[in-house]
Image 1 (tube, rainbow, N blue to C red):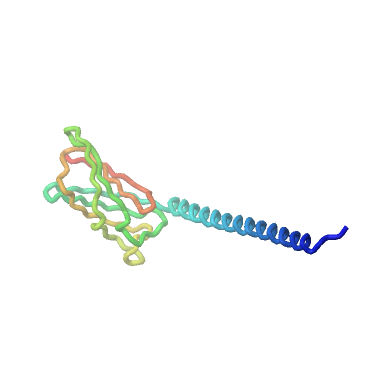
Image 2 (spheres, rainbow, N blue to C red):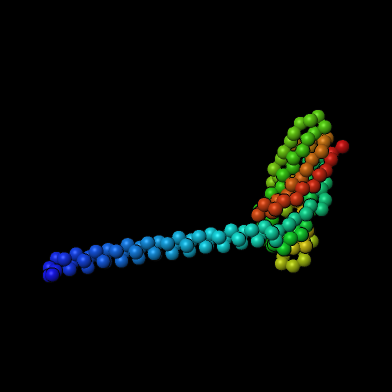
Length: 162
């Protein structure tokens, strides 16, 4: 049985195409696996960061004449926060007349008041202060201050305005 030149060329081309397709499939699978592993590592790092995070509100006071709310909170976790402006603070509650209210507090009034190490970084066991002026006074009622870290770990503190 004799094979002609055209048959040999066709067999070589078919083999090259099969090898190229297999290589492309293998390279694509490797890339997908690498992206999956990287995504999984990021998800695990975020979960560990949340597990290591905790914040506790120590005290809240409100001055109705100036509409100023002052809150002290402590970093009771093991995570460091370089930017206090990334924290969120929300007041919500119910007035004595039954009206439901909610306010998002501005993020410009944060300061570390009990600095232990690393100036300007909210380290574990340090205390920070939030001063915020409300656009309208709070009516008599029961309220909750909610303070949340940048990775969504929150603590709340109930207070009443008589």
